[in-house]
Length: 430
Image (cartoon, rainbow, N blue to C red; front, side, top):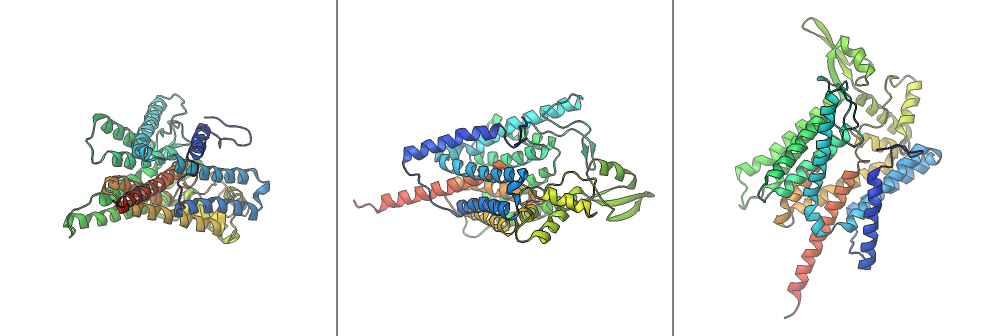
């Protein structure tokens, strides 16, 4: 919405809204005296993430760099978002989370779709990119982004919203407005023209596979097929995401234009003839950014190049002739490689803890009360989408995933508290 001095675009309306959420958390803390908070692995993982950023900031000498300080402050802020949501997520609010996240994301999708339509009419708008935006293999088209940081961010939010909303309505009668909401979410995701849309099939297939519970002691043939189907769809999506984001096949005559718009860079990886025309396989900017991440890991292990340190490292590689000068988008393009490149061993430990905590939380929720089965299945679907999307996107600065981790952890604790309360009632003497 705006750009401020020093912080630039890092401080936006959601950060202001966070102040209200943090205030509500403080009020709840005061009213309850001592909140019913039990330390979980997810809590430890969030603390480890903040610690990893602080350690990398100090070790890498980033205390005098604005970008490193702002990035570290962002990590602390995301940790605070997690804590505030954990404290304010009552069982009633948790019951409504999936539906209301879907409704709000549908509003963003509608804004993005409207922006794309306006952009097609050659009118400039903040809600979508310009009509001449280059799209791999498709030519040019506007990309919906609404009021998010860009098309990929809107796509990531919508990818999370679809399973959550569907999960909130499963086991209930579907209303016309529910169908409209899902339609808007899917159309908005398509309008982003983002590779993230590939993850939706995997997310929904995994959700379908784990959400169905058979009452038979012996699994039926159909129930045995579901996990294999989900695994194959997820593997296929991951392969397409990996290959499609790292190489592009194009006529040799189109290479110069593709380099100018930063879709590809460097020299062809392979060449061949098709219909008597020369074609090439070109490495994309993602390939070069991930190579820079690997070189940063080797160069700076175990310290890392510091929070937000990869762009400066890539600039040094450019001066050495080991990174194309045509690329200006030098931030990490992989959650897995970028985290280790910038935060070193501490970042690797924190990342493993976060992924492990999320996986174990979902596993416990799936084994919990049947009434939460589809909700837990939605979390599983979103998590698979996250793992695939993370191949070519740095996702740990995305606020919505930290909110989701807090919601899952709060739900697990609420179930545990309810279960213990029931056991206490049964154990009371007559």
